[in-house]
Amino acid sequence: MVGRIPIPTQCVVYTFGIIISLTVYGVLQERVMSQPYDGQYFTFSIFPVMCNRIASSFFAFTLCLVKKEHIAPKAPLWKYALIAMTNVCASSCQYECLKYVPFTVQMISKTFKILPVMLMGTVLLGKRYMARQWMVACSVAVGISTFIAFAPTEEHGKLSDSTWKGFGYLCFFLGFDSLTSILEERLFRDYQMHANNQILYVNMFSGGTAMTYMLCLRHLGPALEFSYQHHELAEDVAMMSMSAAMSQYFMFRQIQEFGALAFTVTLNIRQAFSIFLSYVTYGHPVLPLQMLGLFVIFMALFSGSAANWLARHKANDTESSPLLGKDGGRYGRQR
Image (tube, rainbow, N blue to C red):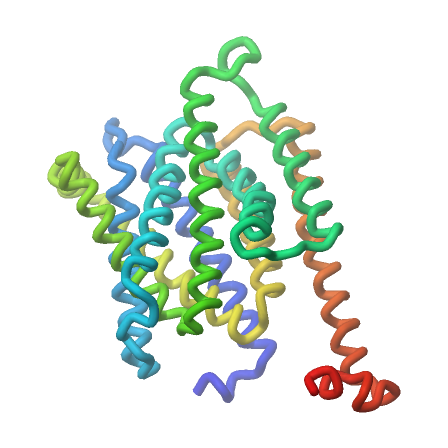
């Protein structure tokens, strides 16, 4: 059935699927952690992490059954568990961060992840990056610094203690999230597994880790009681979990069919749309110099994506050129 759908239509479906599902997820994430329910705030940040991971593991298990993929683990279980631990730490810091800083600041700061990922990739995976990639990463860092530096402050131009606490959680989130990405890439490289296999076991361990953490702190009972007393919270968490699971399907399908470049461009569009929607929904103030920072960030991201596309397009033209012959072409190099 999927094969009969025109390729442009598939690209549009996956793109809008990612944007819509992640935008819904982001708006609900901010709603759960920063807005009151009947005058009371929900303070158990691990609870939505646990629900999201359980939903995603069931979704991946279903996809494995439908596609008849191997369900048995392809890698040692401790490697899945290690990724799960860094993933839970990153998600927990992400939710805690929303108690102290706006969603827009968190979303913009996520783009800073490019730089630590490149640094960890160089150290842990031995990767080498081109000068233009470092320029994009540094430009994004400058844009983020501008956006945060000129953000409206509370205490006569000074950041409050709670805001600094939020930035602390944000730094931990970026560190753990970058490490998670590197470990996931290394697992794919070393064991050649299907994406659903990694999604299944990482989310299964993540859900178990989050649940164990809540049981040890005796937070699971109060979180369930709060959800029972405030049905709107339960609905938001359920919708957020469904959105997270669906987004993973669209993301991996787009990467599989159209490559990482199309996925990167889609995420850039999603970030811009989510920030705009957050400003409209929750009325966050924005200053002209912050808009300048946003412009620098997204210009750097889109120029980086365009440069990657041009480089790939030029490489494809070179490989298919009839003037090279077998010795200078791709097949000659393989020999």
